[in-house]
Image (cartoon, rainbow over all chains, first blue to last red):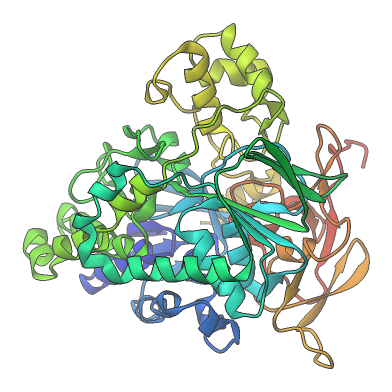
Length: 459
Length: 99
């Protein structure tokens, strides 16, 4: 099958782009890993609308209803529960839906595949019942799952506070909150005046913080957090004021911000830019969201973290850029102005510089015994010793240690390897490259590839 | 460790699935990876050290939820919604060629 535009991801950016492109008359296909539209932020929104979980998820979540409805009505072809495992020039996309592979072509590709939580290794992070805050929130949105027992949260940023509030709204309890945020620096506060337009969001954050403080123990100014137990999490320990503290724990939820999903743009050899303050790579984009490769666009958090509202606007901008380039719209600039997209994006991003400065990624030195690569169980120490005997190149570390060769293909250890290489070689982190990402983007079975041959032969 | 807010005494679950052969209640909208968190010892075992692992990210990027779903090994459990009668088995250690 052939389309004008293939959009990967049915979150805010992908959905709003699809709606715009359909309104302009483009033939659009939207491919998404999830069984229903919404992305992670509006996950399960259609099903949850009638659930007791819905009011507890908050007013921002409810705002996704209109966008999902518009997407459903847009006439875009929609492939849920589908993984894209290969993208080739042209553009040729190879997909798998329910174990059957297929091949489609599109004149332009829009990657709107969002973000993932920043992997931050610490002792015990591979123990069962240690998971991310985002994971717990997905469980809540998917089957209304609430954690039971002594729930601890360790991390920083808006998401842990939001999740904690949602949990409390549903009658859940939190034993304690280990706040890893450092004291706001003057640099963060200096950016606050620029955020005055988003005062509503700021007040919301402070309200969440107050609710969490009321519900459980709030711990600040600690170091060396460890999750410990035989076969599963049993207790947490940390260092504070020269003393080792220990608590019993059943579930530990961790979160240190989110980073763009870059495996696709890395595999397609797009240029990337290192964001030093937030410690992530993002594809270099022009003012329409086009990457360094013609007709390959990125919108939403996959192009740099901005949150769902900014993602919605960037999806529309990319849609207009694509429509202009493909000759579907003659006047994309006029349309961009008429919809006030630049003003809307500026407003959506107003609080971002403040948040970025307030929540920098943790830069503490990893102890040698901490597992960096969860899949292949490679420790920071093993990576350091490989790095000492190699150039500052992740491929050399990968070849020497198997780090990054497991099923996640470096999605969990990539930035850790980069940081350890920089540390050993005395380089700025941004000077060290990321893993070389090779196909397939997702694991596929030989059976799936065989089903592709069959379909091609029949066509 | 997890319980659905939809679970009420006297109200039947949305469906039953089989986890390592044991009938297990499940709810509409949840995934295989969500069920794995409710059944004791249902996690996978690392093919490297053999230690127990449970789902970590729930969004398709950590691959800790790999399981055998309806006979297909190394399925990312967090991307597969549960269906009535689904057979979920734990993936233990490295694959064996002779199986």
